[in-house]
Image 1 (tube, rainbow, N blue to C red):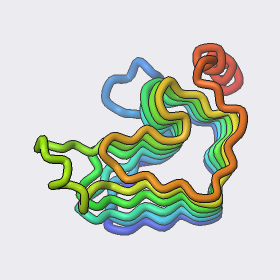
Image 2 (tube, helix red, strand yellow; image 1 turned 90 degrees about the vertical axis):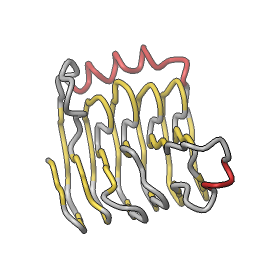
Image 3 (cartoon, rainbow, N blue to C red; image 1 turned 30 degrees about the vertical axis):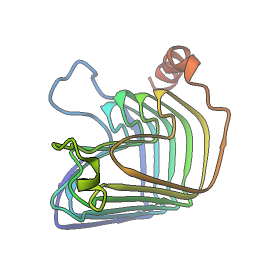
Image 4 (tube, rainbow, N blue to C red; image 1 turned 60 degrees about the vertical axis):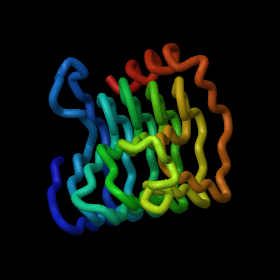
Length: 189
């Protein structure tokens, strides 16, 4: 589902069984492809999805200061063949904020950023020039089990502020990603 709007609110919804053709070169895959400056997702489940990037949600910020909140959401059995199995943020702009509160992440696999992939471009060699506008990822009061990624099982972040608070994370093993992807692919299909 592609949504392009100034503000998007999604509550009490279920997304199940999304199989995506990984040979497709244009579309990333996933349940939701969002282009917005404000997204609020509450009490929503994303279960059994396969995509290239953001197999549950792919986000493209519309403007600087974009804000995205996932509250009491379940992300389960998700595979991204490249980046961000749960959430992939495309080209975050200045001061983009991504928050997860009271969420559950189970059986998630990707090459980079199992739960979140976010990469901010910096054109200057002086990192201090950007410190006040870096994107922010905040994951609080959440649980994760069986996250598999070569880099960043929970978060892959380049030039972003990451805040982790009250996280329970168990049985994460990046060394078994290929075996896990095969198992998840069999399960999803």
